[in-house]
Image (cartoon, rainbow, N blue to C red; front, side, top):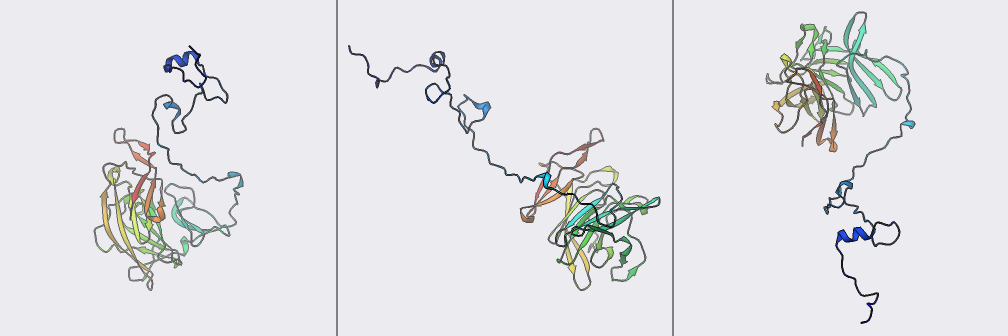
Length: 306
């Protein structure tokens, strides 16, 4: 009987037999080489399962060595104190700070405007004039509010308002407020925003507020008795240019969050996503109902608003 030619296939051996006689040898030969499936994770080798390719997430990189820090050219900044708010006015290239100013032994609310181009800051609190609902001047200081919600509202590119809601009113024995105030940065006036009716969100401190177009959103906060608000409210803002007045109508008041999502009494801030179609509420803190202590909330909360 003639010997088998080189092209004659040899009998197939089991995987166990091949492993005994054919150890792995590195090199260009494909025989006995260990192949790696690029679609398989390290922990899945030999399982025979393939994972779907995961979506690639691209992150913007910033070389921190190229960042330059410049000191303030002139002016002052708010006194470091809790309940501080900072808002970016992109159209005017400036930052507006709702904070506090320590004069002597007293600490009062103060509004600072920082021009990012010249790096000059100005405390405009002394220039603010209170006006009544019919536009008459009133002699009274801005309320001493601690931990209010503050949002930036720009009905026109050359019009800038701060909307201040809630907070603890130090001038009224620390009572929690549900009043909405406006601060007209353009005209240097302030007053109460007419809610249109008595149906408005409950008094609270530390809520997160943001404006998208003409819609005002208020999330969370703490109600009376240290009860955290697991709800949000939606108001519609109307700006009358001739009078410079703002009116507000509440479309949703203290609407409960869906039961399937986590909540946070105090959010770390917000970010507008998808061109303003959704709001990302940044992680903050909440009260532990079992211990009564504060705990850090590590989850963000997304709201679709279109």
